[in-house]
Length: 191
Ligand code: GRF
Image (cartoon, rainbow, N blue to C red):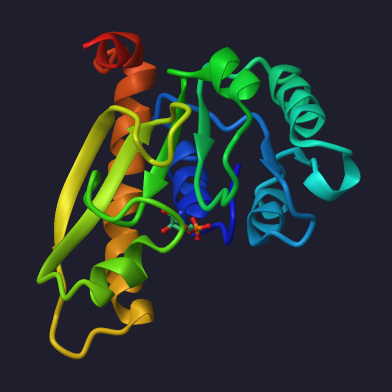
C-alpha cells in the first residue's frame, strides 16, 4: 500500500527482473489520488482504494481494507507512504507479515514528520528504517536500518531525497530475503 509511489516503483522494477524471488499481486491505497496507484497501473498490477471518508468509523474502514488485502492472499503486505495508523484488527490479522518503511533511524523521530523532526532537532545524522508494523507508531521490530548524514543547508526535501534511495534498497533487499526464507519475520517479532 503506497503513497507517492517511489518505493513501489523500485519494488515493481525489481520484481520484474527474472531472478527476483517476489512478485507484487496488488496495490492498495486509502486515497484515490495516490501516485502509487498510477505506478501500479503502469506495471499492469491490480489496484484497490478504501477511503476512510467512505466509512462511518475506523473499524469498518479497517475491515474493508483487510478484506480487500486478504482477497489477494499475499504472503507479505508492504506499507510505504501509507500515512494512517491501521486499526488493531488489521494489524492483528497481518502482522508480522506487515512491514513499513520510515525515513528516520527508529526509534529516533517516529511519526508522520520523521524527516522534518530530525532537521528541527538539529541532528547531524538520521537514517532510513524498515520495520514490522505493530499497534504503535513506528514502534515495531526493526528489520533493517541505515544511517544517512544530515548535511549543512539540508531542507526537508533534499534530506528526504537522500533518504529515499536508502529506504528503497532496504525494502528490496528485505523483500528478497523474506521471499527466499533467509529472513523470518515471525522469528524477528518473537525476539
Ligand atoms: C517514504 O519516505 C516513506 O518512508 C514515508 O513516505 C515516503 C513515501 O514515499 N512514510 P513513496 O510513496 O514511496 O514515494
